[in-house]
Image (cartoon, rainbow, N blue to C red; front, top):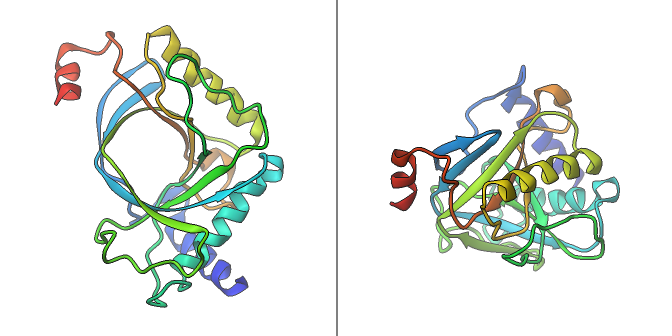
Amino acid sequence: MFRAIASLLLIAALTFIGGQVMAIEKPNYTVIGTVGDIEYRQYAPYIVAETRIPGDWSANSAGNEGFRRLVQYISGNNDARGKIAMTAPVAQSRGEKIAMTAPVSQASTGADWAVSFVMPSGYTLDTLPAPRDPRIELKLIPARTVAVLRYSGGWSQRRYLKEEQRLLSELEATGVQPQTAPEFARYNAPFMPSFFRRNEIIVDVDKVPEALSANERVAFAR
């Protein structure tokens, strides 16, 4: 396990230089438009390797444990015993869905966390090597429309909850309902200075606000 994590850190060191993300694959999306600090995107389908961790945010234990499992998978703990390229972001979200009529809160504890890595686009579910760890699942994420709040800084629970509430409040103010639990997406290695980090909170939505231009709403309708 130590070698797997060390290898990933070396990859990260070569990938994240001077605060810039270099040649690392991310899911494909189209920006529909922005309202205030919220960006609306249309994502194409993509595949993730996902594992679920019980517990709360304490010391980000869920994210750390999930990260370790997934690093081992892409580092060779799979049926092909082959390596899979690292992608961004690393995503973490509550395992349960939320009601369509109310915003979600991460204040409660005890629910599972879903931690995932996006798989490179050259793979399909049929061609990805199967995980040897039964706690890891390969799954297809269908095309989706999301609202995104981007921020830099540390990964503390306090900061995350502050930004999550800002996202949900802005959605409520524009009449947009979240359809899933918010997802915390991290694009940088842990040793990246916090002011260089790209962090995002992502949530599926039922529509885009009326404040978007007519052309942008047409793009959404497609």
